[in-house]
Image (cartoon, rainbow, N blue to C red; front, side, top):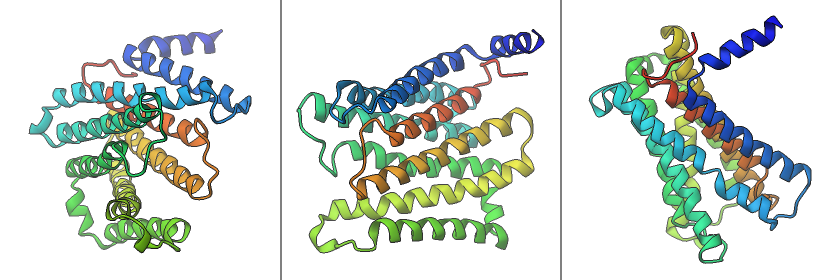
Length: 277
């Protein structure tokens, strides 16, 4: 009985916004699990609509993120700018999904690549990098990069990720048969994603050593969201390159999880929200 009472008290102290986001996440995740357990065909409406509707989570997270940014001074403070950029990145992710859904449900065609959706998906990368840079300013990231071990960590992570991307996706790449725009995106996606994961690795090290209490938990949750989204991107590209990608499959469920984690972290950055005590 005591355990149930403690759990009840924890739930009561959770911000209502987070309870709302968790309810959406749980509903969508359950939807995705059922779709995959039943092994529904790729063109089944339940599978397609699952993949087309979970943009509501990053969209909602972005709205809450903009509110949190204002509470930290918006563009007038480093932390405010960081939250603002992450919220903008989430909004672009949502818009990317919306554009792809428009191709399917309005024009009744498969979305081309590149397409308008890539404005959102690719556009979120520089915003994430900018968000990490301003978050790093709070932690003296620029000063830390002057330390050899920290610089080598970032370079090492980026090199490892880029090498993996090259050998898995780009080794036999024939640039002569690809448009300039597609080539830019094909190389830009892994480069940009590797850069923000490398920066996130350093920010993680700094946050563990320098931040304390509630702020550290929010930063760590935000970084976990970035790592999860990178994993989702990597698995998506891998399955696409092997022609085994399935709409509404593991990639979409990972994206959903990444968006949920980032949305929760942005909500918790808002001082007006009552956090766990």
